[in-house]
Length: 197
Image (cartoon, rainbow, N blue to C red; front, side, top):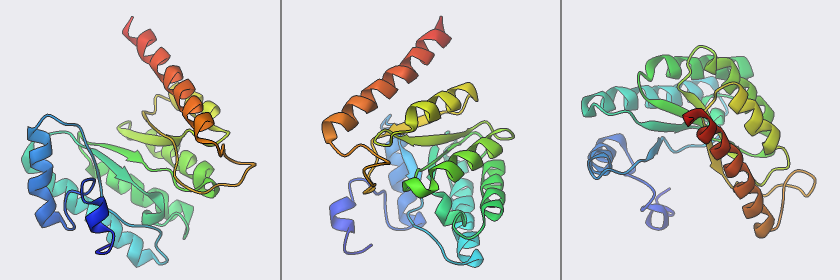
């Protein structure tokens, strides 16, 4: 993290909660929208997943003083997706219960985790509708995933995708990825326009 921080610092508030809070306040006071993430990747043990969950819980509690609704990005492998799906779902449910008026949107990892991530999102969303989902435009499957999220009123953060995926799973050429992103964005905008009529 220390090695990469100089290159990524314009996207990262600060390396720890104590120093990140003033930066988060400044972003909010400047009128910008942002997504807050506790950086981390897959965990190998249940205690590591529990620790990641408690980091988010501390963050929620710390931001209560700002009196503002925030968007949070959460990676399910941090919460134990690769250890046990039910355990991960329980951890996410505890975060969703504690998030108040904030919104959690699940980050999407590589394609081997796409289906399980969508399934967990849908399950927890039934109880906590402020839960949303990231969808990757470079995969071959997102048109159906976007439609399914729309039907279940799950909010979407559309992104292009950043993982190296095989030819039978994802688009490889950037012009085709951009075209699919635009197509999916139009699919979402059509729903927004219809809802506002």
